[in-house]
Length: 325
Ligand code: SIN
Image (cartoon, rainbow, N blue to C red):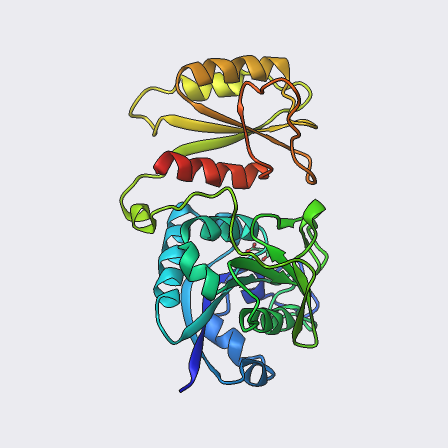
């Protein structure tokens, strides 16, 4: 019996189209359906081996416009397919701009016992499908090789022949086809001529993520968590204004992730406002705006919780899920 490999489409540049085949910048993301993308990759048949492709369009957008409902829908559809006995893995085509957030979110909410035996592989492209030299088709083939590799587990990201973990991957370049990076941790592996060469064990688990009951996404409101950046000249004015918003006008501010300078330091004026916010019950998490490494704790306790090495955008997701729990 043929097993199934599921492809879920979310849009992005991989599904983008521009008027000219030489224009890799002035295109519109999220134009080509996932089924059409697959048909345009002749080598896919061979890469799938004894697997039959199944595709579904979950969303069709530029990933900068993703909302929490898109995440909920994607998590639910992914969970649905992972729970089907003859499905081996799920591949998701997605825009690069917020891919690291979606990958991290999925790794926090999908049940670990399913992810241990059935990987979820996100892939993307930096050039639109209409390009005369698109990178999407090779990325899809590499994602298929990763999804069908017996050592794959958890949520991983494949781009430009490189396999990244959901925890460490970050978009690091606005133009290069090799736009993603795993920082200090380095990639999990490389895809070479259809074979994965692992350089780190693919554990799949997010060590510091606590199990999240997926069904809660349907009825628990998403808390309002903002990211603020500490920088020269910043004040506490914006944060105080957010905290002073009248009840009922918007959901109450529930949390702040502060992208601190260097080792998570914060301008004294913003720090004072954060202290006041925390006293009012707003949860504050400290991360760093540095794109590599993590905040290193010293001998004195930090006044604000730290992000456990998560980047500001991922720390925001972790805090939202924590508050929703
Ligand atoms: C997007 O994130 O949807 C657009 C940019 C990209 O995919 O590279």
